[in-house]
Length: 368
Ligand code: FNR
Image (tube, rainbow, N blue to C red):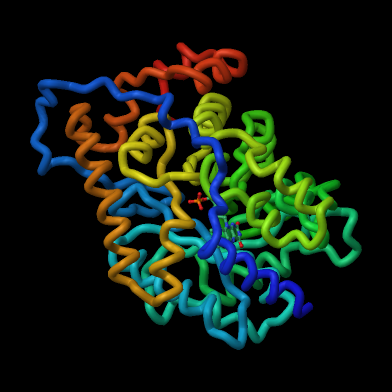
């Protein structure tokens, strides 16, 4: 039981002190806007708002879930409250990290609770997919899902699919049998929206189609090219075999740009494009490719551990101004128009997509 808590500390520490990013890009350098010399709009009239799961948000940026459950030090609580204050100020959604610790130790609930500082924020709870596997006798069901959402007054639940990290860590949960079925059953009775999310290895169109078919409400593609959870486990590994395995899989997965295209092409689900999103031009490209939000985790961790709300907001405002500027230069007044501007896909991303989807058809229609 203590292990989960210690693990969380280690993860945050490695994410802060080491390079845990993928050695490969997230693919957006292969996606190009076509500069428009006559935008025929005023920069001031650009509207960055988006709608998602029945709510309206001022900006198309999502603070991806990172932490919770580290009772004692208050560290996780501080991180979540700092992120929540920034999200409240900007009217953007945010997630908390895995609530498994809270299910085991209900007294850690406060480290996930942000309603006192962020009464209006669209808040997303978080549980892991393998905990729902039929292989586990004490598997999660609707009771745990309701507890996760209602204890912290969240608006939706994210289920993280994380087989890469689980498979390269010694204590990983690698029971995934029956997860889809369990999620279908959960979705049938659960009164809150469910977001299926990856954590850095991307979602393929095959998985996205299955998730859509059981009624999942949205997908966070959590693609390759940002934080590598195999990378984090490399630093945590205790022996050579473990280090070798984690190093080998450091850059495993589907790049974020590719995953957005696959999921947009194959489903009608709203998309959060997370995974290595580090500037507003890449974010604007993700929106143009059909995502509703760009999601960010790692860059916000540093100011968040210091309780630096202004620091978090400063980073987000930089992204916002870059998105706005890119929209101006392609003549898009809003995100819907951005999905109709021409884009050009080159290189590895193009080679991949040509073998996977009808690329010209996708390029013509990138809205939901
Ligand atoms: C995460 N992420 C994550 N995801 C999740 O579903 N549950 C979790 O508990 C965590 N924990 C967590 C901790 C820390 C310190 C980081 C940096 C990230 C994954 C996160 O939501 C996101 O999908 C990935 O980090 C990719 O985005 P970035 O970091 O490349 O912007």
